[in-house]
Image 1 (cartoon, rainbow, N blue to C red):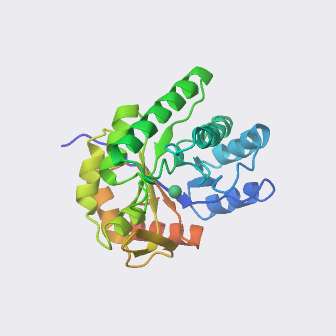
Image 2 (image 1 turned 90 degrees about the horizontal axis):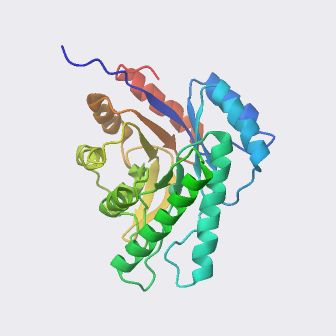
Image 3 (image 1 turned 120 degrees about the vertical axis):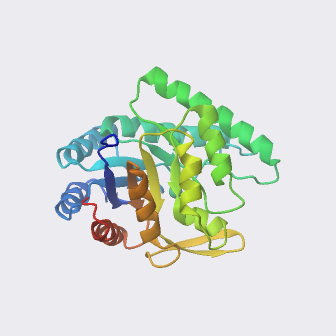
Length: 272
Ligand SMILES: [Zn+2]
């Protein structure tokens, strides 16, 4: 008999709503049987530390695991030094809220290539992330940085680049399967992707999943889950590997697609 491993898969949407709606929404997610949610600071860091702590405590009581998506306005390899500093501040402010919320990881899109050489952008991003990791450690914030696999070829964040960045900075990772699908112009190898990520030896992996429209340049926009890409073979692959993870739905119909994921897992014999 093999080693008995307990498998834990968590599902939930991106977005918990504003200060007033968040408690109600978290309760609704929990009542629906969902057990994860990503706080969307994508357009602004709309919680102060005190509210972050209060909402975090509610989520904890409901066993809804929180993560955070830092603002979109981030470029750790900008031409302008002050934009790099502003980017680091947005990510670190998100990390401070994450600490008070007991949320992890803090997901972000690290950098754009612009007119720079790919290697220069990678090095600048690595340096900025190492510095931020040092700051998080010094502050004793209990959270982790997670660069995301991005959807556009103009952004740093292919599977290979992200794995390398994570290895070199000892960070966490956010694997967005829709973004990979868009980057590969409508194809994805779930087994190969998971093989590559498993080389990082994480006990727990943070995923984003949704449907996606794309052009030759990559991601166009997120759409509800359907065939692009199909969720079922991904779910099968996770169960086969007994991979502990959180899967955040970034679909425009958020928690409804999380319920669809839950239904698929249950059809495959795993109860969320
Ligand atoms: Zn993202």
